[in-house]
Image 1 (cartoon, rainbow, N blue to C red):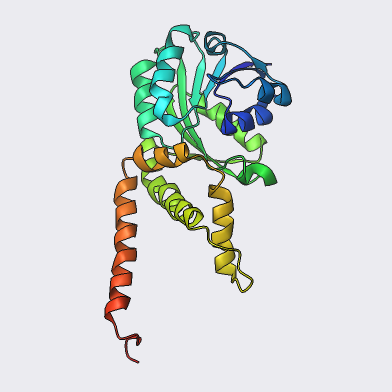
Image 2 (cartoon, rainbow, N blue to C red; image 1 turned 90 degrees about the vertical axis):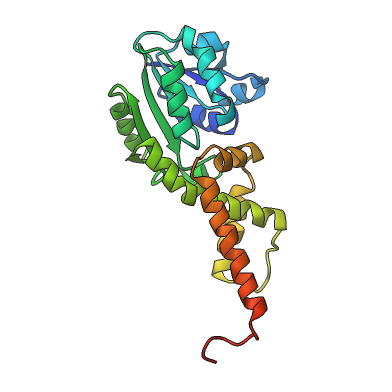
Length: 249
């Protein structure tokens, strides 16, 4: 059984541990006290240095602290180790990996397009973005993903971030806005309105830290967000200046 060091035992780290604990000998590290979570999961806690010396190292920390985490790991990584991140943006983490981590380790950047809430119904059919960075070990991740029923998608960090500006950043902006609005579960709701309620249920469980990373660390997100706000404002201005009749009425 291969050894795995899991850096970060937050929400997604816990999901990762739960999924992989039967495939790997996991040693987890978190800067916070996660002893209760580790006991529930049945994984061992250790130091960052101990976790870094494992054959596979998964970095499941907020993107904003990822560079400093890579710096802390770098002196302890073993030759031939595989380092994987699971961040929600890809261009910056890949840049930091290449700048900070030693050349004797293989690198793969990933983004699971699911989380603890959406994974409650199982992993089958869920998507896993895989960006090869250094070495050919991404192929083993593709194979493992398929064993779990995941759908692996190989792409570049730039293409990932371009697509996620719409798929994730825009969706989270709309969803979190609706959460803040506290839209009610109305008796006369339509199927479309139920989709909005479902979106609130999913995104409302995510941390604001994740939302901030998605909006500020994806270089393409701000343009999409501004375009959306502009469209919404333009529509409101258009209807307010009309006489209430449809064109051609």
